[in-house]
Structures are given as C-alpha cells and as structure tokens.
Image (tube, rainbow, N blue to C red):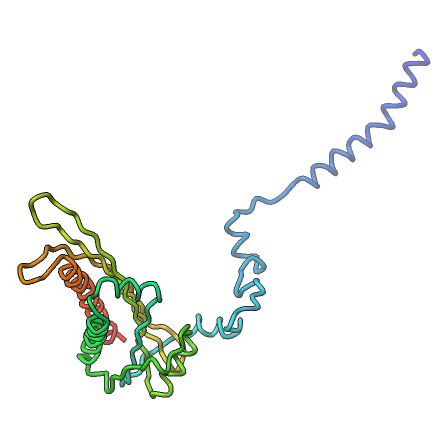
Length: 249
C-alpha cells in the first residue's frame, strides 16, 4: 500500500464519526410535530384577547366597565316615564326655513312631528308619563351627558332623541306640471337614563313623489307639503318599530 493511500484511509477513519454526528444533530433539530394552525390558536391562551390593548385616554368608560357592559344583560323597566328631545343641525334648520313661507309655519310643522312621536309612545300601556324636554335644558351643542341630566331633572326613565333631515328636487316637464320628489331621513334612539345604555336605535329613509295641487298657490307650497309627507312616512314606520320594541322588551 502506498504512503498516499494510507493517509487517505487514516483521514476517513477520523472524519466519518463527525459526519454521522452532524447528520444526527440536524435531523433532531429540524424535526417538528405537525400542528393544525387552528389548534394553536385555541390552545394558546396568549392569543385570546379579552380586553382592549389600546391606551385611549379620551375614553369616558373604563376598561373594567366596558367588560361589565358587554358581558351584562339589560332589561327595560316595566313602567316608563318618557321624555323626548329633538336635535337638528344648524345647517339643516336653515334648509328647512328656505322651504317654508314663515317661521310660524316651520315651528308648527316641527311641533306636529313631535306630537306624532308622542302619540306612538302613548299607545303603549307601559308608558305612564310623556314629557318634552324644553330647549332651555339643552345646551347649544348637546351631549349625551347633558341630555341625560336634563331627563333626570324631569324624572324620566328613558329619553327619546330624534333628528330629521330632508331634501327634494323637481323634474320639470314641458306643457305639464312638474314632478316633485322629496326624501326624508329620520334617526331615533332611546337612551336609558339610569344605565346610560341605548337599547333601541333606528334610521328610516323614505321618499314621496307628487305634483302641485289646484288649491296650492305655487310649487313652493306643493314642495313643502310633499316634503312633509316624506317625513310622515318615516315617522309612521318608526312608530311600528317602537311598538314592537316596547312589546318585546
């Protein structure tokens, strides 16, 4: 055997155990049990988020109370003293005035809407008292806190807050009366005065299409009537929802 051949054999004897150990180590290090991703989520408690992880300094409700509210149950009182308040954006009020011949007509129309809501609630045998929160008790920029405190002063169990917005357009036709179509959107919420919770809320949008009647002086008068009709449609539908809410709760 040559000298070179003996050196190669000697080298292989030393390197073989090292190669075997390296292979064994790699096989142990890369081997992993097969786990379904969904099982990892459900079995690892660290992935289950049970409260907010955001530091919201502007929040008016503590994290502890948020957990209590979301985990708790609510029951509407059997006997209800109801207060109601209307909120209207300043821009919307101006738009209303443009469509009415006088301030008196506008105010009477708004009062009629309020009276219709009152009738819807009074139809429920659970309502023992109904009152209107006067503007004197509501700030120019009302908040839920302001409205709630006003309702407390009037000894109301729930306060109904609503807002109405509407608009219209005319489609003129040659040699015939124009079609006037109005849209109205009414938003309404019920605020529980004792808890501050809102057990009921709804938004209803309706439209109404008509033409000027013979007894109406001009299209502006017709437009006012048609706009009112659209609003009344939203109030009637909300009235049905209110009846169901007071029955179910």
